[in-house]
Image (tube, rainbow, N blue to C red; front, side):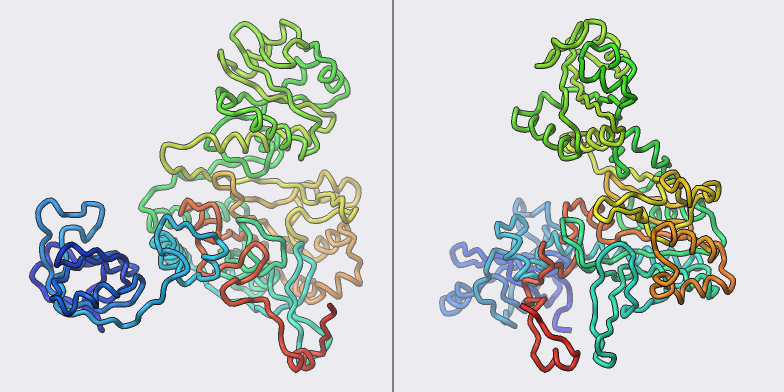
Length: 584
């Protein structure tokens, strides 16, 4: 090894030892005839001090930041009062005996520092420089520790990590496939896997009753902060289980991860709510339960409120709900208050009503329309205190009220800053099996077509499909959907009924899923599983707003690699081999 120690390793116990350090020049300062410079690697930073003569001083002056240096010297104790208490190596420094430039750096396109001023586009173009920043390196190291903790735990629980194919058959599972043309079979295509869903079910049929995989998945979707065209998930499947068995394993695994990666304890079991309950209480199926601000039904008192519109909605069997925002609205200006109304309208609400409780009545632009007795009833039901404000929404469609208020609750939740990082998990259960797609004008799977209906709802499949509950579940962390899973369909006749309900004909089912339906006929154990978004999990642990901060080489919002230039054109010869023509 060129180096004897890393740049984060030396301590008081090493004083007097001869060492060799290698790393990047982080900073350089000249004080008279002394040169101080910091050497950095992924382990930390060590201060070095040189005493060059007049001839070699020019050499130090010409050193550029981010050049790779090899320093040999003796570990010294820093002078009293010059220690750096914020640095692990802050009590020592290395007195330089010799210095070699292993690789000189040209001026970098941006400063490699934590408070980087460069745009994300520039940092993604020079990602290898951006990754030198300690914050991003900590994220990647955390990712390694989390993955290792998962693998160690699953191995002890008797799970086998089994790889599944990347070149698969294109099947309608929800998102758009990435297609790979076949050179050997011109005109035919592989699909990159959106998930290993069918393969892991086939593994259950094959008798591997405990499977997991840290797996790459690909979906050709429009991107946002928590999406990438290629992403990683923790994938798991078990045979002979019910929902509780899945919950228990996942909770124990996450408890182990938190202990190993963060040295923190998680409280288990995680709370559980049905989809119906969580929508009524929070207006979303991925609520942040770090704060209260629940939706409160006030339809009954709205009937006699004096406000014509709300009275009309109440009498038409509609819904009127509100949230007690406490003093949060006092923090918002008019522009921010208008944004709340815009959020409500984006969820098809007609608008919002904001009222402030004075202790004896209501204030607000619409307060004059309400009867005097309404304020007392409202204060009692919503537990208003003097100075609290409420946001009210009413509509004949209950789902519009829930989703609009839920979105406002989520927006206001950004104003609530926890005193310390909190991790509140929540299981959501009993999702609808199907949901109506306005775009396709048909029923589609709420999760995927292999999700088992609730046994007691099987009789509704053909007649009241909107009432059929599924045996699916989501795991939510701090308002982010971390993953989804379900108990799967294990009987071929039930799978065929679900396909039929989705408008998939027998011929289409045979073309797309024939091999899978046939496999179900050879003895399929009851089974279920879950997939957790690993990138999202690491981002939440690291406190990052974007999963791009926890992926070594992510794509930008347009699914491009600014560093390599992918996607890029290919030669005509390559296209001819594949039998393809590019139309402009």
